[in-house]
Structure formats: structure tokens, C-alpha cells
Image 1 (tube, rainbow, N blue to C red):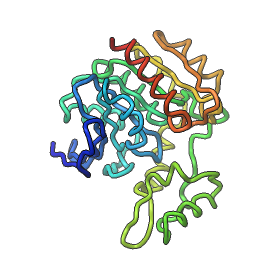
Image 2: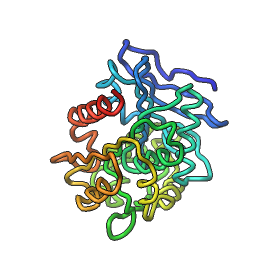
Image 3: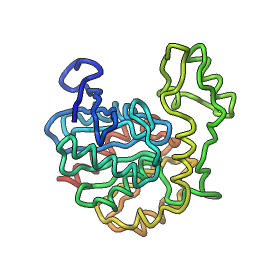
Length: 278
């Protein structure tokens, strides 16, 4: 493995953005450093590891947060296979590259599915499981598993123009997607390939319940009150059918609950980790 910093540290508690070669592919990841227990944090579709930077800062004195850009996202290389199992294998490869024997694993949305697939696939590597607003019924009518991004623009003259062009496709607020917007020599564009995102979303569509039920680590299921993905009924079912699972609802929050209520999110995650790993 080789690694380098994207930027110099600003202080002891600041997170570092690093690049490494993992399993032959360029992989970007956030690392808060330190000697505390490791929390591996996995973002959802269209996201980047840096969405967990506020959480990493909040937990800096207690836990080391490692948050990769997953395959085909952010500044991590793409790959032909976008199955949940392939994503989970990437997580194991990163832990191996960083000499981390085991970690608590947190995932939001698609990252939540990767987390519980990983917990079932490599139980010895997952000390505790935290799933933020992800359903096991990722299919109609419970959820709309595929957001059609195939017509989104490749380039725009400015970041604002790129956001407006995305919103013209029926997206109420392009802010989350613009976390992956950068300026290229020929204009502003997204770091992910929309064809990859379509393939990845389709790979996660369906009933994921068998993966969820296949592990037994202490688990925390976090649901946003106004989630468009995880209904209250399904959340209660998920908590009831898997031993050692706690369910917490975040009042007033939408799907991106870590952004809607970052302080509560950090407190809830920290409290669960203290109980599960203490």
C-alpha cells in the first residue's frame, strides 16, 4: 500500500484526506487518526467519505474514523462489479491495507447495506454494526431503488449551473450531489460516472433481508422520521428479526439524518459505540 495526504493537517483533531493503492486500485479515504477503536464509515450512492468529517471531528478524542470513497465514487477508481459483495470486499481490503484487524462499521443508505453484507460476510472483522436509514426491502412499493441519473449533464460552466441542471431533472435540492462536483479543464462535473451509478443502484435493488439476518453483532438501526427509504413498519420489523439490535428514530430528520441533526447523530453513534465496544 502507498498513501499520501491531500492536504496538511491543521491540528491534532482534524481529519486527514489520504490516497492509497488498495487491491491495485486508487482509493481515497478520510482518516481521523489516533489510537482509539476504529469506526469504518461507508457513504451511500452518489456520496463521498468526507460526508463523515463532522462525525469524525466529534468523535476524535474517542474513536478513529476511517471513511473511504467507495468504488466508483469520489476519487476512488471505478470497477466493473458493483454488487454489495464487491463493495464489502473492498472494505475488508482497506482494513487489511491499514492493518486494522476489526472495526465497528457504520453505513448510510447504500453504505448501510454494504455494512450489513460485510457483517455477514466477514463477521470476525465487524465488532459492531450501525445502519443509518437503509431498508432491507429496497424494491417497489417500499422504496424507489433507482434514481435515474442517466440524463444528468457531464459538464457545466459553473458549480451553480451544474446544480441547476441536475435540479432540472426533478431533484429538489442538488446539494448532496454537488459534494462530488469539481472543476475539470473543460468545466464543472461530477466525480462519479452516471453509468456506474445506474449499475450500482440496480445491483442493490431487491430484498436484502437475508444479509441483514445473517449476522449477530450488536447493531444500531437509525431511522429518519421523514425517510423516503425506510418506513417505520420495516424498521420495526428489521429490529425485531435480528438479535441484539437497537432502533432509534431521529425526529424531524430526512434521509440525510447525519446532516439534518449532526449533534444528535454524533451523540447516538458515540453512545452506542461506548456500550457495544466498552
